[in-house]
Length: 314
Ligand SMILES: [Mg+2]
Image (cartoon, rainbow, N blue to C red; front, side, top):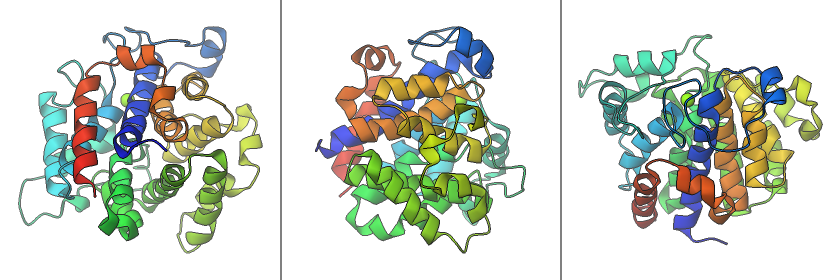
């Protein structure tokens, strides 16, 4: 098994590469991408950014990791980092923020710097605040609870709190908890069987959740056999989680997985980012094509944070 540093890098870079592959075609339809599929890193499509530029998904994950990598969870500091990203272009590959979801923006604007404010109460909790904006940046939180011995039992609580910084509805929190179980299982034993086992365990563990039924499709044992026409790749958290897991289960390599995710269309960057982080955990860092790793902007910045995390997460 890869060293801790390599495994953290596999997830963070796997996620960022998926994001960067999807950015130029975000919001494109599946029909158009079927005719003209993405096969490589490109620049200047939906946004005026060069090849290898990653978006809000990776920016918010890196903003969280920069704080978590010191070895303690300070939700207030993470919100401060989100403000630096949204207002100042920090944690971006190009120096400016070019993509932000409505729920994330409103939650960050709810943050007041008042020490009496609970930062996990910044998130929105309405039915219509269930985009994929917390799921797309939950992986550093999950990895920290995996690698820090003392936090192992806190996996669900940290996934919930991490989500609640921006997305506080039970549906978004449950998506993060299901994802956390999958990532834990892949870090323990990188195999597709681990994913199926994690989903079966999630099915049994969250029966009391009001949102358990929402994820019923994921919990059936033949979910991987779902037809592509029944897989939706929108920014709705349920669609995104299903699409990412489906891409992971129906492909054999990192590259095949993230390209399949991008070419589903619609929320291309986020579906590919989440699929890519999981595929990084499944196939390992070296399985992420070298040309894509090298094309990724600010890769060294992200990797330096992964190295700091590996030192401090014990
Ligand atoms: Mg994005």
